[in-house]
Structures are given as structure tokens and as C-alpha cells.
Length: 178
Image (tube, rainbow, N blue to C red; front, side, top):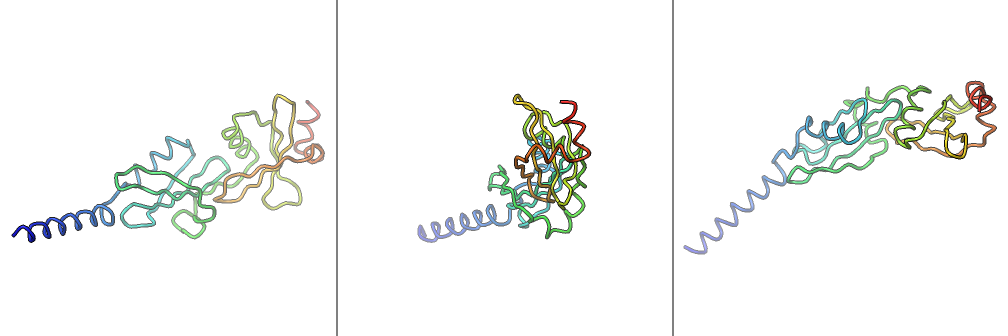
């Protein structure tokens, strides 16, 4: 009798654990989207479940010109964390309309959001498909940077020679006024 009770309790506990881990809906889309909006302050967010129980989500996050794809992992208790998943959202048609078209103003706003500094101006880098040049104002004066803008990938910036910004017709005025 005691053995039967123990086996029964183990069976019930195992089924409950299975339900909690594999079946139980861990988090809803609205809750996850709200959490990402509160944390990152993007222009838009859309999440789709990767696993049916809400334990893994793919979230497309769009700022002014930058778009980032996150994989959100949700614990059994509903807490979550995100990791950048470059290009994962490319394969998910439900997230296809999220990445914004890059504009000089949008790139400048996103750089300011990231670094907290002042960006004087941005312009498309001639001869490049996905690179832009931006002039940043810092304590040391003006700095010219390349910004790589690719859908679903966080911005990558690299220092550029000042001549690159001075030669760009849209940024020449910024340097002349400095």
C-alpha cells in the first residue's frame, strides 16, 4: 500500500513537472512586448513564439533606423532574458515588415540613443551598400565614424578618417561650420 502511494505521488509529481516545463504557457506576447518596450524604448516590437509553450520567442525590435532580432528565453516562472540573434528574424516572415528604411535622421537618433552623445549629421557613404558616415560631437571636437546598417543586426561603428566626412557633400557643411 505504501509503495503504491509513493509510486502514485511520483507519477503525479512527474506529470505536474512535465506540464509545468513543456506545456504550461510561460508568458504571453503582450507581456513580453511590453517588457521589451519598457526596457529598450523602441519604435515597435513584435514577438512570435518559437516554442509552443512560450519558453522561446523571436522578437523583432525596430528603432528609428536600427532593427535588432532578439531570442527571448522565458523561465518556468515567467522571468525572461534576451540575446541578440543576428539574422534569425530574416527567416521569419511574420517579422518581415519591421525593419525601418535607414535615413540620415533615423541613424543619428539611434546613435544618440546608444551613446548618449550628440550626432551632428549622417549621410550615405558613397560606394557602399550598407554604410553611412556620421559626424559626432564630443569633448575632443568632431569625430567621423562609419556606421554599418543591416536589418536585424545592431549598429556597428568604426572610426573613419576625417577626410571621409569632409569629402562627403552632405557632411562637408558640418565640418566647415566647426
